[in-house]
Amino acid sequence: MFADRARIFIRAGKGGDGHVSFRREKYVPDGGPDGGDGGKGGDVIFVVDEGLNTLTDFRHITKYRAQDGEPGGKRNCHGANGADVVLKVPEGTVIMDAESGKVIADMSGENKRQIVLRGGRGGKGNQHYATATMQVPKYAQPGQPAQELEVLLELKVIADVGLVGFPNVGKSTFLSRVTNAQPKIANYHFTTLSPNLGVVDTENGGFVIADIPGLIEGASEGVGLGHEFLRHIERTRVIIHIVDAASTEGRDPIDDIYKINKELEAYNPEIAARPQVIAANKIDCIYTEDGEESPIDKLKAEFEPKGIQVYPISAVSGQGVRELLFHVKELLDSCPQEPVVFEQEFFPEDMLIGENLPYTVEQSPENPTIFVVEGPKIEKMLGYTNLDSEKGFAFFQKFLKEGGILEELEKAGIQEGDTVRMYGFDFDYYK
Image 1 (cartoon, rainbow, N blue to C red):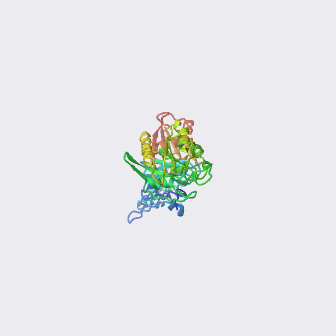
Image 2: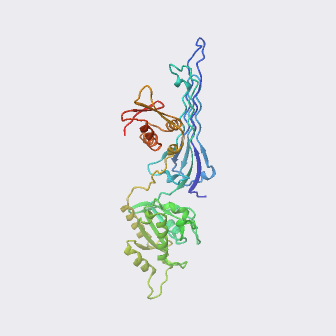
């Protein structure tokens, strides 16, 4: 069964605890601390697999946990890092926070690999806490706790052109005519229950086309099956609107176009504004009496003044199809080439900012220009943040501001050029 949505639980690995131990060797009765550091927890990583086109695997297994880091050992032995969990998804998969619906990552374009949750940093062994006054430290740092998150996966197919229209207007027949795709075709509604992709080759170039399951009135509000697949036209650059010009089921093709465009507008106005072309299908079934206006003429009179070209075609015989495809390729050439990529809106590390964990801000008694910031909130943040990276340092600055720490420092009397010290990290303070 085709699956384009899945809801899963992911958890990064916990950092291993630091170890408390002391050297115990012959002739060394009072050996110093030698407790090793704990290993880093595994990350949760999403990668694009070109061989996948569905999210079916995530329907069967819904919980994924990276391995915890091993605790440190005696004789300065570092604990092993936890193994990452790597989740393979098809290109075009959008990862969202299940609670807010905000985008975490769009696995398309240049983004082929993304770390969504980072494993916790391992705790330091007691060897790091020996001082001149504390030569027998019996404390080791615990590993950072694991981050966890419930995410929603949505597959939004990557195609240049999307076929839209009411059920049973001939979209699948058209796709089988112009590509090598072999969609299921039958004379009843909702034959297509999944998007079908095909590659069109023309003399002036090729493009990818997607047959979207038939929309109906109210689809944008969740009525019918069409709503389930509206997401698949979000990346398309041109829309082919297929209508039954012969009205074989008694519907008015002009009214059908307005209704479908209304649904597109309600779902996403940006989609409705993209270039469209009307494929007036089933012309081999049109019968008009003498003096009666052709339905093709009616369609052209209604939409061509609005800049939407109408092409009479027969998906069965192939009549008019070549001309339509050439026009579509011209529209694509005139459209921006940049693929639609959804920007990140939700940053898992931001959850650290909102956590109500304690911290302290104190002026160093030895040096009044040094301000020491410590506590579980700070320790946890440092455990998940790579300060050497540009992105990590940007989050660090955001954390200080939105977490209220900068405000506390200013209340404590910090001045420009003073030093902020956090668990071995020193930073100069500037407004």
